[in-house]
Amino acid sequence: MSIETSKIAELTVPERLKPGDTIAVIAPASFVDDNRIAGAKAVIESRGYQAQISANLKDSYGYLAGSCDQARADAFMNAFADQNVRGIICARGGYGTMRILPLIDWTAVRKNPKFFCGFSDITALHSALHKEAGMMTYHGGPMPRRENTIADDWNDNSFWQAAESGPSVGIVAGVPNGPPVETLVGGQATGVLEGGNLTLLAALCGTRWQIDLHGKILLVEDISEAPYRIDRSLTQMLLSGALDGVAGIVFGHSPTCERGADDEGFTLREVILDRLGIFGVPLIYGFPCGHSDFRATIPLGRTVNLDANAGTLEFA
Image (cartoon, rainbow, N blue to C red; front, side, top):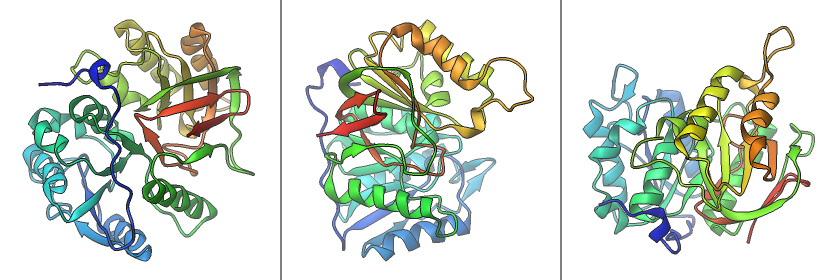
């Protein structure tokens, strides 16, 4: 039976990770190529951890990982059931996570809370883990890496700080000399942070895993969606009531969704203001998360203070 968000007084905070622990790498959505698997393993082991690569990580059918939906659901559940595994990282997003939600034994998962991290299509699992297992999760992760860039180092540092220090990560702000965090509507707000990838949040509307934002801060971002498609997803959330009661909004840096100079129609910022500015709550754009070069790892299901004037999130 689903656990209603309103009935969860406080989400379970998984134990912090420490060198020597085993971290499982799974693929709940699209299949993973060898380079990405090697990159994940290298990042984990370079920090002194053991990497456990899911047995079916290289399997695929169509655009999906594993041999079938049940195989991906089993890999997810096995990682939670394995007492040697202390943390779980999703190697990539893509598509397919929603397909496994009905196949998961949430009661078993709830009995074994542990560090869980991913973004993009993994948004479906963040929402489900909050609602079904009452467990706090982390949006972000150290993969994919590029070629030892400044962004790689920044992303890795953010990930390990969250993994090893827990949800009290302090102030998360824009990156010096990186994309600016823009104040679209000023002010401050405090609430539990929820959200993830916009396309997934919109797709979950009307399901038992639809997000509940009453009194909460929304984190949202996307990739390769034209402004009109961002408009459509935000409108879907508006019409479904998913945005009712939102206390503040953080729109992550989404460069591939921004309209080019020669394009016609609304810009991304105009869409965000048109669809979300109506709430009159603190609203920023350009936060370093999701499908951006700079990708912070931040706790979802944790109380945060949004300072839209400064463009920061502060986790106590």
